[in-house]
Each structure stands twice: as C-alpha cells, then as structure tokens.
Amino acid sequence: MKKKNCIITGGTSGLGLNLLKKFINNDFFVHVIAKDNKKINYFNDYFHKRDLQSLKFYQADLSESKELRKSVSQLKNLDSIDVLINNAGSLFLKKELNSNGLEKTFVVNYLSHFFLTISLIEIIKKTKNSRIINISSWVHKLAKLNLNDINFSGSYNGVAAYNNSKLMNILFNYKISRIYGNTISTYAIHPGWVNTNFGNNNISFVRTMLKFVRSLFAKKPSNVANEIYTLCTNDKYLNYSGKYLVKNEVRKSSNFSYSFDLQDKLWEMSMKMINNY
Ligand SMILES: NC(=O)c1ccc[n+]([C@@H]2O[C@H](COP(=O)([O-])OP(=O)(O)OC[C@H]3O[C@@H](n4cnc5c(N)ncnc54)[C@H](OP(=O)(O)O)[C@@H]3O)[C@@H](O)[C@H]2O)c1
Image 1: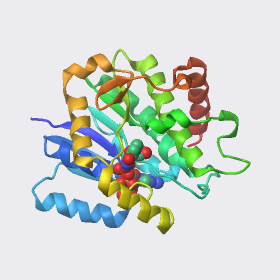
Image 2: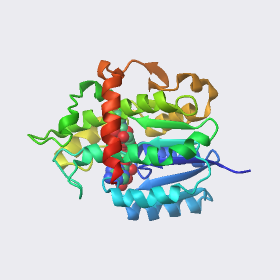
Image 3: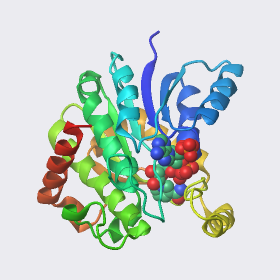
C-alpha cells in the first residue's frame, strides 16, 4: 500500500528527530529537510540499519534561499503531502545576516517555512485530510513586531527577534487557515518546554545553563512528538483546524495574532520577499 508522506524541517535534533522516529515507525514516508551533512549521513545509516527505509533527506540550510529552493524543487515531484511540519527553529543571540542581507532568525524560523508551504500548497491542497503544523511558542505573546523593520536596523535583540518569529508562525497559520481552511487543516502549536538542543548554537555559558535546567524540568521530546503525531492522525482534531494549541487543546493566542490586518500585511510582505527567492 502506498505510504502517506510527511515532511519535517529540522529532523536531525530535538523535536524534529523525535517526530521523524514516530512517523517512520508508523508507516509514513518521511521527508526531512536538514542542514548538517554529517548528521544526515549518520541518521540515514541509523534508520536504514534498523530497516526503516521510508526516509529521504534533503540537505538545505534554511537561512539560504538557494539551498531551500533545491529541496523544494524535488519535493514538488511528490503526488501527495499528508503532513507538513514546519519545525526547524533557531535563536541567534548575535545578529547574523544571510547572503541576501536578511536577519537569520526571521528567515530560518519564519520566511523559509512560508516559502516551503506556499511552494507545496497545491499538492497539500489536493491531498485528502492533509495537515500543516506550525511549531510556534508561548513566547509569541511577548513579541513586539514591527513589519517595517524586520531586520532590526537599530539595536538587535536576539530574544525579541525569536519572539517575533514565533508570532509570525501564528499569524501565518491563521492566514493559511482563512484561505485554505476548507481543504487543509492547519495548526499552530506551543510544544511546551522541551528537553532538546534548542539554543545550543549560542555561547557556552547560555548553552550550559540551558542544558542543566532543561534536563531537570523540561518535557521529553518523544512525548511531545507523540502528541503531534496524534494531532496529525486522529480525525477528532479536524475540528480544531486553524487554531493555536497547547497539549492538543485549543488555547487563546495573543490579541495581536488575531488581527486580520497584521496577518494580511505579513502575508503580502512575505509574498513579495519570496518572489525573488
Ligand atoms: N525546546 C523548547 O523548549 C521549545 C519551546 C517552544 C518552541 N520550540 C520550537 O520547537 C522547534 C524545534 O526546536 P527544538 O526544541 O527541537 O530545538 P533543536 O533541538 O535545536 O532542533 C532544531 C532543529 O532545527 C534545525 N535547524 C536550525 N537552524 C536551521 C537551519 N538554518 N537550516 C535547517 N535546519 C535548521 C536544527 O538543525 P541541526 O540538527 O543541524 O542543529 C535542528 O534539527 C523550534 O521551532 C523551536 O522554536 C521549542
């Protein structure tokens, strides 16, 4: 029988890796976009040795449009996409720009996923019961989004850039639901505080602190992956489409996130940006 297709961004660590394990063990064909060739080779071997071969990696650093474009052109050959999980995310405490001069938090956490989703939307739309999961965070409630200065032309604050990107994930979720809600189920979720490698790309002090506290108090990524798998496969959740969820329950997101005006402005700006992507 033909397997269902699931696409996951950032499937070589943390939540994404646990999602990969869950979906591949449950008869999905999993397509993973990941940036690190060493990890790709390692996990390719790992899964193949365990006779889990329904897996394809696409190497791309999501901060660079030309790399993502290559993956997208291959993914466009799929004849169905049942699940798309916009998962990859990063926190850059120091400002970094990509080769187009765009701030990387914005690009990795939001714009790359916008481009990926829009590029594949026709395939997702024609797949029965398809679902898009946008991994956001409760910190979107702290966002102070200024769409006229997406690049932080004044002083840069990495945490603020991250909070903004997580709000954009939700604004995007609401907008695609408004447009495609009849044919695609879309969800923005806060996964909780999860024991992953998140933030480890930053200076060692931050890394050590995060690791220690997380190991004591945070949720296991495998438990969160189970929750998301249920969300993607149980028909009960079709009724929750277009919503913001925490532990698979509908929650209220920030007041800003419900603004049609903000959703529309972000959509228009992103569409213009991906025109030359
Ligand atoms: N952990 C939490 O408590 C928490 C809470 C709320 C929301 N979240 C969200 O959950 C999602 C998953 O994060 P996580 O906690 O699982 O962290 P993680 O362990 O650091 O995993 C993040 C994944 O994203 C990938 N990634 C980062 N930058 C990338 C780029 N430029 N191109 C391609 N892939 C890239 C990483 O690749 P590598 O494997 O190569 O590093 C990794 O696979 C993120 O969107 C994060 O914002 C996490």
